[in-house]
Image 1 (cartoon, rainbow, N blue to C red):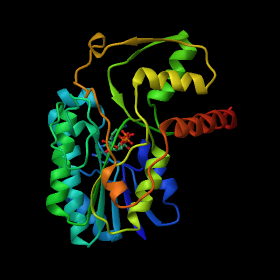
Image 2: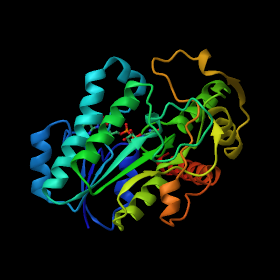
Image 3: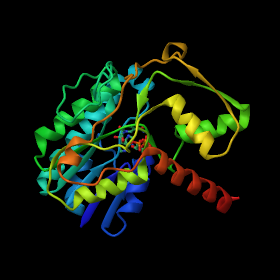
Length: 285
Ligand SMILES: NC(=O)c1ccc[n+]([C@@H]2O[C@H](COP(=O)([O-])OP(=O)(O)OC[C@H]3O[C@@H](n4cnc5c(N)ncnc54)[C@H](OP(=O)(O)O)[C@@H]3O)[C@@H](O)[C@H]2O)c1
């Protein structure tokens, strides 16, 4: 299959490129294609005529989105709109990655795909606008909402915890935000599986299991055999521009109803990731 990937050097994009290597890939970074440029997007898509487009590009700095509102909507709403229109022009399907932040997450209930959305941040609102545009402009879409990602490209919560442990031997982590940490390799494999189907629609995809960031940090240090003092704190103790959902658990209901095997438990995925991270470090030394 001919697959065009945007945001190909982002955290998820990098693993998508690896996991989809059996396909004919057109892997585009922002330097290759700025998805906010409607004409450039149409020209690129018409030139390569992919059968599937995967949009892993986004403006992901949640706090910065609160100030750079127009830019957030430009990338997270107009970008997917441009891709959806371009995909339709060449009869390609579109996989668009979205987020748990489309929900308010203010009560402790796992969210299903067709539950009411109510984003409480500019990031969440702009991502929801992107979903709406995709549904409007390309029927053959997969909208994949995910959460709490970590992978190999760039920094993430796990690498930050490991760095802080090294530098300080002690960390303070919020204990009142709950979610499901998700390994980008597992997510990329699940997306690869979806491509082989025409089961279009909206999917929640996260690793199984639920924890707070505090519990996640404890799991990271336990699996890394690091002796670190982890102090639980509340979200109020952190000054952050954007409000985060407190309960961000995504019920992967549509995936389950399709009969697809659930993604593995986050602790198992984390153990694999930490093992590979350690080996990667040793190879790079
Ligand atoms: N990270 C999470 O915890 C999380 C959770 C839920 C959902 N998601 C969603 O998952 C997807 C992937 O996230 P990620 O964490 O892999 O993000 P990421 O590492 O920040 O990667 C985003 C990529 O998008 C590119 N990009 C930004 N603006 C662009 C533009 N105008 N045109 C083309 N490319 C552009 C960036 O390029 P540069 O590097 O050049 O800026 C980067 O390569 C996003 O849709 C995000 O909303 C992420």
